[in-house]
Image 1 (tube, rainbow, N blue to C red):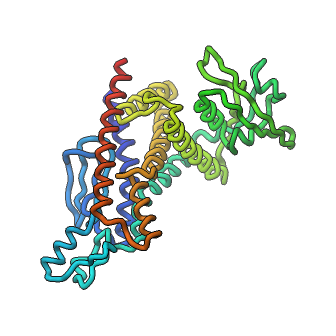
Image 2 (spheres, one colour):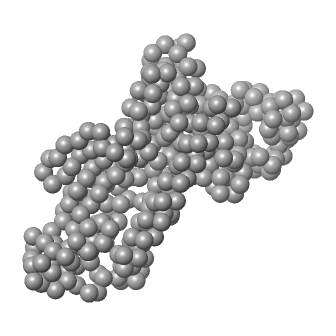
Image 3 (cartoon, rainbow, N blue to C red):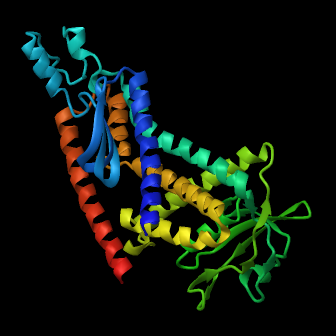
Length: 373
């Protein structure tokens, strides 16, 4: 179990580091001062200061933070301006009138709005870039699972529709490139909704609609595909194409999972926090161990890819305290020509942060309860 915890913390460290480094790097490029770069939340257990930035490792693996100068409003800058005997700007624009350069330099609110948008968006973007690096590693090791039917189940919807072994699936509700996309669609199909399928046979395309049949033994709806994965090595330019397919699958997985959760198609037991993720790491590690250290390592890379994408997608949700919520305010500023008053935005983000902490506590409690159960 100690090994599992160490692996989980390493994965957490890498994906959160990638996210916060995105914010950090683009902030620096745009001349925005970064006061703190932190991994984890809660009490600081280690850290140092270099230049204008304090680098900290905090106790709880619940996220991270890249704290910019003046991120939560202009009050500090206004106080400094007042102390310097110069009036602060009353427009709420974020640029101070007649303020000395040394007072104004590096304030997040005073950066051009598109610089702030780039800085906020960079966190999720770097998660996707990091995930693509992981996808290249996974594709190079395992190749790609192409959606080619090995066989169909007798009496199934697929057989009734005339589908045969060797058919290549091109669309399964939407365009697909990997066999696992079929598994994802069926895992989220909780009510047996019809599936529109386009497949290729002998160079000719065919279209059909399959109505899944509930399988008591499996406990879910099935269309009757069997062994529907033909593996291909990722050689030459295929490496980057297959890596892109893997990344796109992870994004689709995360987006559809969030959509299903909002629609009530998933339960609280389908959501995992840090404790649940550590349990998943342990399960994947245990399953891969018979294949040797390399298989364990590549499974951890694959898991890190999925978690990095999930972090990126979740942070883009338009909710207060998340990057997506901050982007909403910034785009409103673009449309209005002036920002929402910083104090009002701060209250909304603080309320969102409190709600997020309550949700994290609930998810962690649910993880522990599920494990005990």
